[in-house]
Image (spheres, rainbow, N blue to C red):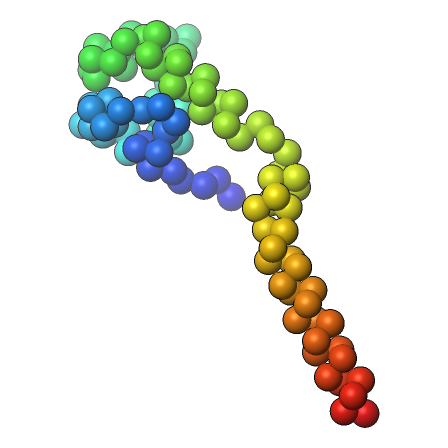
Length: 103
């Protein structure tokens, strides 16, 4: 399932640039990628003409975005949720201990 991320969350984007993209009908990062993919030969000129954001700046924003999600999911997930896992493990151990004592 594809996540939908607001264009304002694009790494390094300014509020002015986000507003320009939103006025061009691009509200999410995914819509930006799709818009570029729909252009003939992936040309950025129509989008730069419509938004006033330079081609170099769009490439910079998209390059930063493409690098953001390159980390492996498992290691990222474990780094983000290790405390949750420890608490869950402690809870399971507590329940097992209580069940053992009740018998």
